[in-house]
Amino acid sequence: MTKSYPHYLQVSGWNALLPPRQAKQSLVSDLEVDVAIIGAGYTGLAAAKRWRELAPDDEIAVIDASEIGEGTPGRHSGFLLEIALANDARPAQMQRMTRCNELLAQAMSTIVRDVEDAAIDTGLQRSGVYRAAAGPAGARALAQYRVFLQAAGLPFEELDRKAMQQNLGSSFYKEGIYSPHCYLVQPAALIRALAQKLPADIQLYENTPATRLRKSGGRWLIETPGAALRAKNVILANNAFSKHLGVGKSRLVTIYTYAGLTRPIDKELGDSLGSDSSWGILPTHRLGSTLRKMPDGRMLVRSFYGYEKETPTALVSKQLKKNLCTRFPQLKAQELDKVWGGAIGFTLGGGSLWGEVKPGLFVSSGCNGGGVVKGTLFGACLAELANGKQGADIPALFGHANWMPPDPLRSIGFHLTSALERFRGRAEI
Ligand SMILES: Cc1cc2nc3c(=O)[nH]c(=O)nc-3n(C[C@H](O)[C@H](O)[C@H](O)COP(=O)(O)OP(=O)(O)OC[C@H]3O[C@@H](n4cnc5c(N)ncnc54)[C@H](O)[C@@H]3O)c2cc1C
Image (cartoon, rainbow, N blue to C red; front, side, top):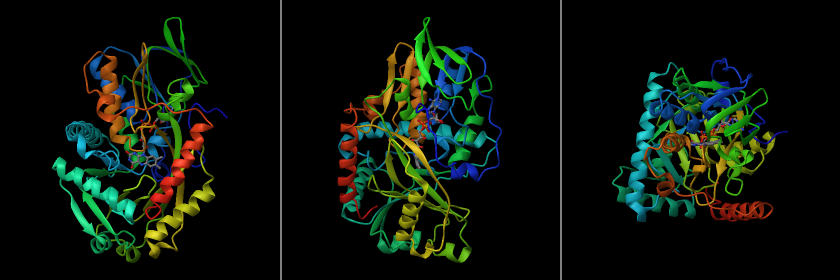
């Protein structure tokens, strides 16, 4: 089994809800282009679109190991944040954070524009987001986020247990903050819509994994199972899997996280899930659970992490169900209709691996679990960097991916830190 691209145990639950889609052809004959982009996710598609604007005559090819909607970009929880994640918010660095938030809002507006123009219903709505705390670790994180929102002059609403219960139908949470700066979306529909908006003269090859990357005859040579792709410039937009193509091995870890969807819940039970017709909750603790009530009455739960490999589905399913029922005991008779995993590029320090690593070789990987809007921004800025345009200084604003020791030390460090965090944030998990 090759490790240069993701192999998932289960199909994406979101993609399975959509009508079948005809994938674009895979690469079957050798090709030479000006720029090859590996990964048709948020980062790769944004890089391709921006490159086209900056260099209208360049030949651009995007390859993806999977099919649009079925791969990692169609597996997330659907929270599109216009402002920094609670964990990243630094009240002491307000100038930097304000600039980050401005850039994220601009990236979000490009997503909204593309989605409005595409002929696919993505369910995109600016529903806002609840951050909810169940115990002391969550309450501390919430307090810090409150300071950040106040200092940034951003609107928010504070909720006590009773208000949380009323809006969301759960008495699990002691307090919460509602912030309007978030869109909710159907993830597989979103990536399908964004791919549909790729200019027609950009070649997109699906089911085309890059298995090796090297320099040959003054060009970058990408090996794929069907053919070779040569390019003057390469953008690695394949998240943690860039390390399997030789970039970021000492800075990236592949972490799997898991999600499940119930079937649509009948109206009577649905009415017990809060007065809001649909809503989204993000955890205040890194190891906490994400929940959504969908407009069609399904419930989403996302939780748990696996280091470098996916946990068997039966175990994941049991754990997700338990987490859902801890918060919503009224759902104990509901089975999870769909359960799946997805890969996240994790870095030490919270920043991404971003920039030119060798002449003509560019990378933006390591999303740290919140990379839909950020990836859209980072991909566009990477195309600007590659085309000599002075854009946003992503590492200065969003941080760096720090060096990590190799395995087994890395794995031991990860498991020890996770165990400690699980203990500290046990009420939130
Ligand atoms: C369960 C879950 C819930 C999440 N919830 C959220 C959320 O609510 N909000 C949020 O912002 N983020 C969320 N995330 C994270 C989010 O999915 C990522 O941050 C985002 O998809 C990153 O975008 P990207 O384009 O940088 O990389 P990816 O989405 O990882 O896309 C990389 C692409 O590269 C392709 N690829 C990989 N290797 C190769 C190769 N060798 N050759 C060719 N192609 C390759 C993959 O098939 C994939 O299509 C979640 C992730 C998971 C798994």
